[in-house]
Image (cartoon, rainbow, N blue to C red):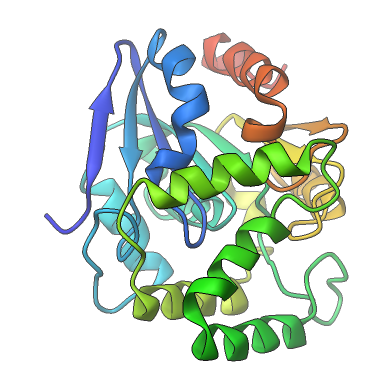
Length: 261
């Protein structure tokens, strides 16, 4: 096994997949309350946290690595990059995903022809160049970017940095490969094939995954609901923990056939 998973709590399985450059410690502020009602599977993506890298480092390989670790049927929550992994798992092994939760994620992170909801590719390229020159400081700067414009930016940045420091430094090669996944992945055409009950949680101040993309995707998915949290940026589970958990609990506790009623 190349991937680390921490399992705790009781109840229906809930898989938590973190974002780029982070690790499963980022979920610390929500673990206690979630584990009271669900059996949590806290995963470190390959090359991050306590997980070894995988080769080839592709979205399909990441989704399969997650599938190899979790129960046969699970509720799957992905944040940012983790949301792409969760979507791919739900598309390629739909029978494995009971309910799908996407947090600050969308089907395509980069602006393209006909898609104005992403980040300009040149910003990815500039970030990649800085990353190659100064790995540690660029990574820490990225943590700050995730919280920009949130109502309580400093507190949220502190939580992200604490989670980041609680586990080994991610491997630069894995982060380069994961950045390539963010740059190249486009799941827009597949969004209409996501039939699972789905919850999308987004901050209205998110600059990395604009809320306009979430509105677009919610309209494409068959059984999706969108909750936009006012004042939140890219990490609403840290900056607005109570609102995040209330929304998540309501969705998870609803019968599957009523989750999107």
